[in-house]
Length: 228
Image 1 (cartoon, rainbow, N blue to C red):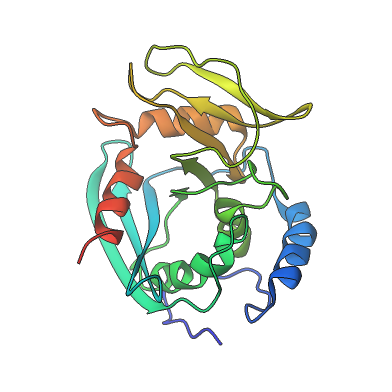
Image 2: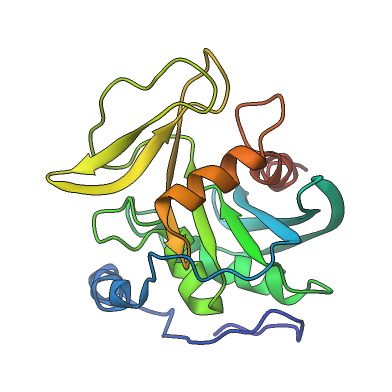
């Protein structure tokens, strides 16, 4: 059972979390229909970077949520929450292992974010419902998946210059993009989470990039989630 500390982030929908892997797959297949892949954003002033690390050989999940003021990317707020990881590590089902602790961290924020940038997949997922989409739908918040590695799909060579990108395809469907955030570095894999189209997602990710491969949002969150 999940208990949340009251906060500003509203949970708009919920399902059971004490499920088997087979039941989790069924939830993904059902809930992917709720993903909105067009722009439904308001003014973006608070951008959240989200990442989850693990301690004690994977037994404890540590979620970091960092809020940056947009567009100047100054730190506003940060929350770290730890809780036992109750779902096993299964590729493609990571949201069932990580989202519960992220929801608890979001609930502790003083103010809800306007946009979620997740170190995870969104639509670029075998069932089109990665963590960024899962979290976006549950909170009805615009969200983007910004993953360091590819889960599925193929793409042509990515232009070498900063900001260059190429579509990520699964068969005949564009499911995301491989984005070069810095000249000469490995691309990131950007996909729609919820309430953002792919073109807007790419623009927003690049607007959060400074001198590093990762956008400032997920770079901050990754550093905190991996901390002591």
